Length: 376
Ligand code: ADP
Image (tube, rainbow, N blue to C red; front, top):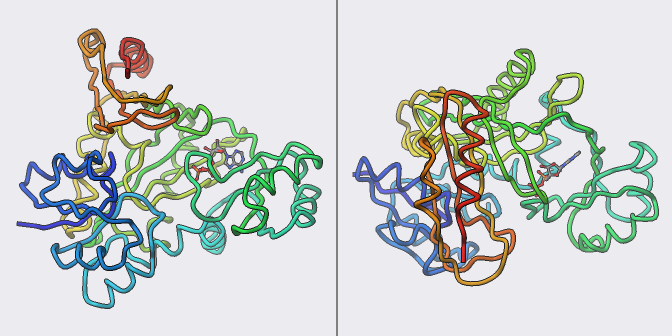
């Protein structure tokens, strides 16, 4: 029986375990929160911080392969495991090329993968210079640690520079400026590479964010054939040049002229790929597990149009889901609740997926179900 270690016990880890339990694999998770989402279904839970090197070693000693469900972890600890002969996927090298947004963009650009213009900045003067070069608005980003838009500040004019610089740590964290892309759409593409070399590219998904948090995904993305082909080509090339093993999510901007730019990468299953559980023949979670075990990958094609809506906390308190019966009134609706004890504003508590003959019907179904659910 395969034994798999996951650093992180959130919803992504939980969904990996749910899929892999069909094969009766054994899971050990490492997460500082005792009642984290994956705790109820993991075989073992090491309650420790993500940077706790001793705990990471302990995890590796218990399993055949270590993976992780988010990228803000200690790459040196992963490197140490690799040197001691443990299998870690994605590798520490892949992670080091991705977890710093500046390093990631440098690597993409070096390999001729299209990205927005960007520049490293360290002080207000350099941000002002970037503003002159690109024209306002510009977007200031911390190179490390950002998620759900935390770590980004849109600067609309010169007079906003100081405030944005201070909001992002006043130079304590490494910073970069990007040109602001007036994109037509945000899409993402998921690609998986197995340790045995197999590659599967998932369909392009169209994403709508609210307050920088993913709100809805619809698949297939309504974009031209040329844009779709460009996204698929980028996916195949990116997974190779970063030497990825496992799932890779590539967030993309579709420009008004139909061409594609890469916004950012995540070397793991991704929120915008939740739809694959019901929408595709093989989910991103199953393919991730197959990939890190070096198995052949499953067919990632879409079964029929699919929509996904995140259930995001709108208040703070104890989570208690109500309204499931009404939410299930629409056929094709599947509800996922992650099991977080506390709801908080902006926190991802669950998601709803629906498949249907058309994207519009699938979207209508998830919105209907969402309107019937209450979190408190
Ligand atoms: P995070 O790592 O926090 O998810 P991102 O860098 O992906 O942050 O940015 C979050 C959102 O901000 C994106 O989904 C997009 O809507 C917007 N954004 C990011 N970079 C740019 C850019 N260069 N131009 C326009 N919008 C951007």
